[in-house]
Image 1 (spheres, one colour):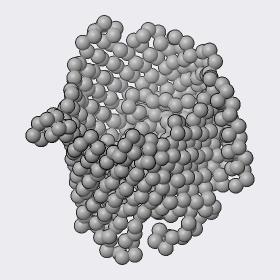
Image 2: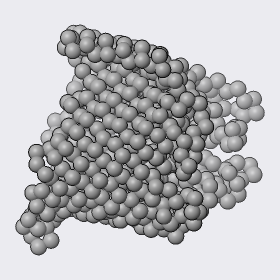
Image 3: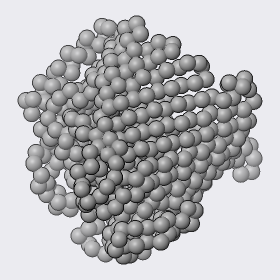
Image 4: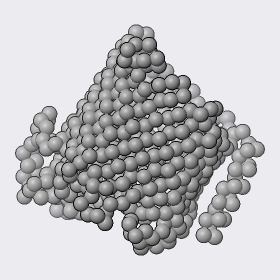
Length: 547
């Protein structure tokens, strides 16, 4: 505790300096929890009931140069189910960068993404416990306004250290339409390479230390129409099953997106096929539960729901090979989703005085069909044939404004969730979920929002009910209370109220929040990437400061 107080006093000193220097920016974030025993969610049996994750980021620029450092403190330990590599307090990231019209050069830690991220993405998401920055060097070259070339070399961050493997990368972007001086359409082409070099210590399997991945992509748009396509191939790499290398296989991915949009109407569809596309900076990190050492970005391409009950059965992308038993064989996924948006015009019979917004989403995901040889860990996948159904989601959202003060949202979701293939446990879950939400504006910055939710299911934990009440006293201060209750659970001891009450105060870029309640065990997902959290009860405090 003393160490944490000293650290926060240091942060405060830096903030004072930041306010006196226009070239200096400082950001501080603290997420702390105090866990308590609860007869419903269970006693807290881990070390240290109080835990805190703290981040201090400092950036300074002068002329064409910029410098930065990020210190992190996990005192006395990190929050539950973060990687054990996040421990103690130390400098986590640092960089120096030079930027001119033609060149940008970076040394130290940096983030990077090629294309959609299927081949490479390094980024930070503190809530998910992800920070896979690269430490090394990167240079970007802009020979013309239509061409961008970049190259990098480094090692991926792992806790306060870096992985053993060396990462190489090259990326190129070409704006063809600008080269041809066209203003009526746009065409971009991208080509990328990523290499990971890690020594092969397994003498039973002969594969190269260097794993190569290549990406080619195309983006085209004209008028209200747009489309993009990306193809990725990965050279043969170790397939790790039951913590042992079982085989070597190449991987590949194909992503296609197409859409059309104009005022009051929009439609978008995407399709993705992935085969053996897990890509880690260390092979033995494959499948770890902490999202560590991941080199690429494969989010679940489904509707990102906003409500508590719609996020119980959340799909996770399945890019990995898994030979659990004869009845559970996976080598990837195939599927996609369609989004449709439509606005009923104002002052019409259906649109009413203010108009009505309608959004429809449909997604479907399945395994890859093919010939599987369980005993020899071999397979031969079909290219476009769908295998076992993993997940489907159909949602309809209607947003209606009744008056200048009242507005409502009506939301329906139908889900199919194959626990056997997604979680590698047992069972299939089918749900119907309905949400009703209304907001009443009571003056400048003051509003009252309330919602009711219900989930119907004959499977797994059966029926749930939930509700939220939120009161915004002004643009700065808000309080809320919510609860979801699994009243349909066959096990009466598991019929738990997962309640939470709290509030927040926001002043410019500063935010303070406090919450007490129960955390439902399961997945926390952001942008299609998830982290598992255990059930717990306690007090949570969040501080975000920026200068």
